[in-house]
Image (cartoon, rainbow, N blue to C red; front, side):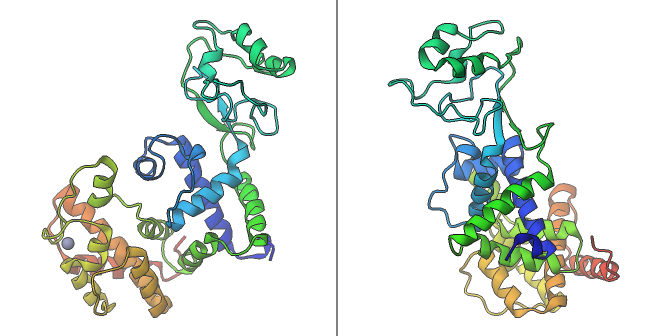
Length: 338
Ligand SMILES: [Zn+2]
């Protein structure tokens, strides 16, 4: 099946992955980017990360999208300190952006900074002449170096101003996905299963995005923050008895159980095991369309309430969460959910 023939959910999911990769490359100080870095590539960046043995669907989707977008990234050379001469894509006006010639023994770890004069705007001709063929040396010399030497940054070459557009990301990833389908089933299909269903539920777009983050363990729960900074996990603000992980907050907390009872989405007996993602998928299979919307709204209202309790010292109030979820459900019934 050609990707263009499928419904809007595919395109939106593809776009989402493209944007996530963009965030991880460009907005490295954001909470989510730091969380992902701590977990998957503590000593590098997302463009040089390995897939590893992680089973996370999100991570696999991001890696697939990263690879599809891979040859669209280039380093803009500032001080050259972050750019590896032989591995990174930093040559402008070339197909791959890479040097593509064998390195001299002992120079594997050479950084672009090593090729620059200590001060000024110039390149070290002695290095360029000894390390590269003449035409490649010329290409390097054509890169202008700013006197103030800012940090090296990534930019995106598929569009003129270097900013990733939805369309250029989509084209790249769509091409990748077709190649994957030729190779057989991929993790992509598993992740798409969830997103396709989320996409069709008549709730606000921001609720869909929130819920997707929840399923991807990307919410700023105390456990997620503690894992990132190697700090201590604090107690759940709603029951104040257990540590605040996402599976606790949404499934196991006595407070959230009261919310689920109040919405009629009563939880079956649960042995306390399994991941949040397993729980969401099992609930999803049991429910019909209206319950899907209510379930997503309930999680969203729970999270909103949890934030008000933490940041505005609001009293805990399960009836308030139920009322909020129901009210927004009614408001969005007319189809004004985008
Ligand atoms: Zn709790």
